[in-house]
Length: 289
Image 1 (tube, one colour):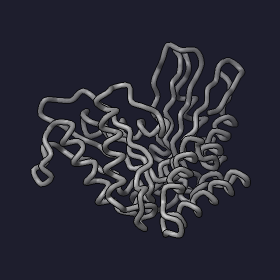
Image 2 (image 1 turned 180 degrees about the vertical axis):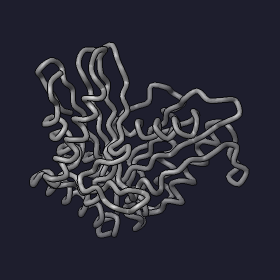
Image 3 (image 1 turned 180 degrees about the horizontal axis):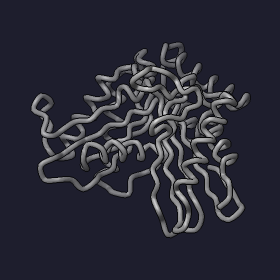
Image 4 (image 1 turned 90 degrees about the vertical axis):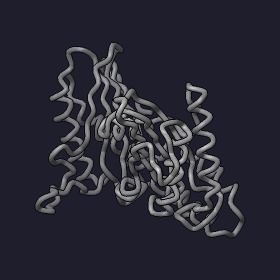
């Protein structure tokens, strides 16, 4: 098995310093939609300047480089233990190169490991598949937007939310309203419906890997995504909470089977710095997206 440590370092660099093209397009459109001279336009101008500088200088888009979350698809016969070791080593190297800020803190002592490794840090999800080669998706999930991510248990009598898509709509809009500007709006939402508490949270973050401008294959979920995006932007929270027309850049909804007794809705809030990158390894060839 080849050593992919250097390739993982490059994947981290790309995720940390290069905002995906679909996100940049969405931000530029949002700037055009805001009122000239408004605080919202000014905030988006600053964001876009930051995106350009980060790309030119290969420096982190945001000082909080967040939790690295890796999803690894691998074929039969590949050692996931060796891949995990290489990913941890790559995180340490990327930290030394300043692509990542040291973020791994011991929950008991408060001590920072200094290299973005620790107990279950970074986060890794391994899934065996039948395709050729290895595919790795990486999300860098910042602390500010993670703090306003949340989970609901339906029915919710306070919000009048039942166990249906209308109930999902109500709790998602409640989550956006409660976040205000604290999640570094404009944001992207990953919304998982169903599962248990743990699987629902995992699914909600994996949904953030979808391009912000794609369309859900399920017509009912596609309609819900469009409605949530429209109504979320009608809340007037705006970029960084300064008010304006753009509170959300995208909403991605997915479902999981669940127990009859449970109906969870998990909302993963991702800030405008929606940092994600992918890597595909087939034989000796490595490609990035």
